[in-house]
Image (tube, rainbow, N blue to C red; front, side):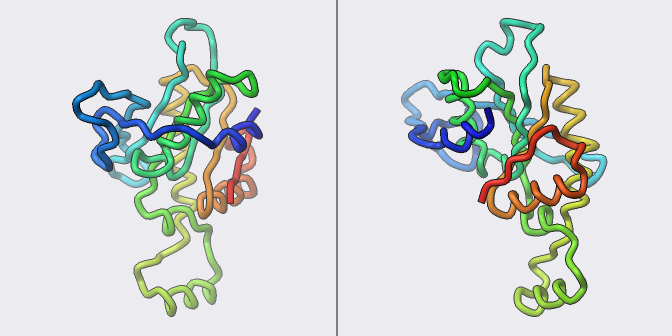
Length: 194
């Protein structure tokens, strides 16, 4: 059903989150439409508070026995890809193409540093020569550990989940492929977008 996710990415209007600080997308004279929630998560890996976003499928509270696939989206903060993916999740509820799913967006604070796999010393030096110290790669193992130790246990203990899926685009897609190669048992499915 996740192949359908890739083709269902069109024609969703932008809608505002109740307390989103990144943009004002709603007419303040109307009632805002809430597409998800943001949660602060204390990270045992980073030693600081991190942000995750959540969208539950319609009807989640009506059947306490039903379990849902959970899609973990890297770069899934409220100012990142969360709004787009919430539209895709809404499509799942109106379509018979694929099943509804729980969306967990994981915000990256410095995506280049957090999502890049370890580089060889010569590759690192070449990047430093070109970009200076502002781009420090090699953070993928730590970000992966953050997902494994903090985010996944939080989500799976809080929500009724079954299959775990990791997805991201662009540099995040590199992280998805790197995670598949390094920890293939961490998720049930992997979707890397370019």
